[in-house]
Image (cartoon, rainbow, N blue to C red; front, side):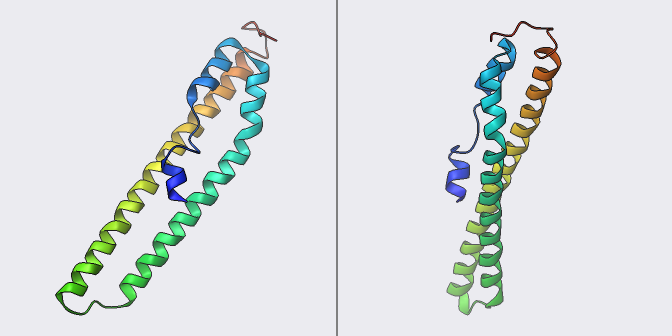
Amino acid sequence: MLAALMLGADVPDAAPALAAVKTCNRSDMRAIIRDEPHRRTQFAAGAYAEQRAIAQERATLLATPPSGASGQATTTAALAQLDARQKQLDDARAIERSWRDLFDEVRADYLANCTTGKRNAED
């Protein structure tokens, strides 16, 4: 699940939203606004599943004390991998928060300037 989050499959490109609000393109804005709740749900579900998997794997590793130096090294390496996954998930969440902030501003800009006639709408 994290792979899809980190590969950008769910990270929207800001350019279409910015272009739509700049030109007051109603049909493009409608499509972006229509698709956003589902995209957010998919992201949240993926982030939740990855966070849960990390927590479960960490709990399993910590529940069984390592035996010997090689066991300690294996546990340390596994915990380092989990920390790396957590950092990737944190990065994905930060990008998602940034997108949501931008999306909300673009929508507010569209409503304030395109629906009131302050800018000329294309359609």
